[in-house]
Image (cartoon, rainbow, N blue to C red; front, side, top):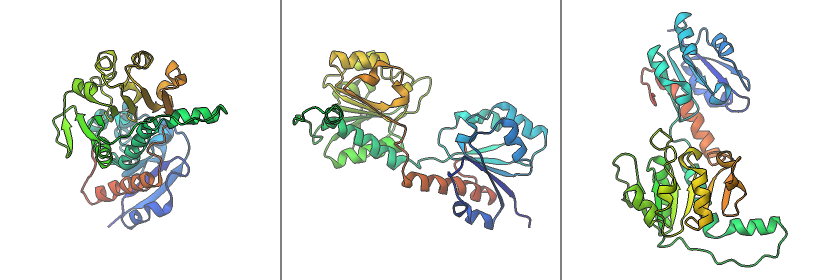
Length: 314
């Protein structure tokens, strides 16, 4: 029986031969690396491939033209496994239209992102962000009164895999955890509330939602005006969930005590220079734990597809 052809297309250093060694038992594997590819270049690479392992960083957009050309040229491509969870960039609607199966890599960064979000929460609770600023400016260091998490209330907005893991960490610190999810959900140890009640009752709020037309700017003046406990708000999900102008107003008026997010979300906004705000590169996911799991799922998607057992289909 002839082995199917698999093409791996990635930026340098993302994946190594040892990572796909198991796959070679079932397929003829070819590897190509480049930092950026055009659609035309990608199409030239996959002429004989039945399956494609595609690194998002190489292309960042698969338009209808890509799928249309695959069909027009009678390419044998059946499925594409990607190294990322969110798949809007790959336009699943066009993949379905032209008969290509898309597979993502879910939950590879759950542990890493949840821990980073909780670390951001602790950074603010213990006032370490202010201490770091004093060190950077060579000012005299004085002890700052800080907070304990025990018996405080954490409100989690979005109880998917990461939000649920965040709840586990908070419960381990003796926190009371309340939450809101777009759909009905039960999570052990979490008391589900309305979105308004989460903002009203929380000492800390952590965002773990996907951005959709309904959730964009979900953290706005209307919600922030409900706060009663001057919460710290942590956003390791997406900057588009938060209205930056409203967040700045809430911090300046004292309704919100602090905000933590990624630099990209506020790089051109006054929030970046506010002492009550911390911003980091998008590194929450970037651990050996996440990378190892990502590569494992990425390869296994193809392994199972060859066996006729598609997994993580979008």
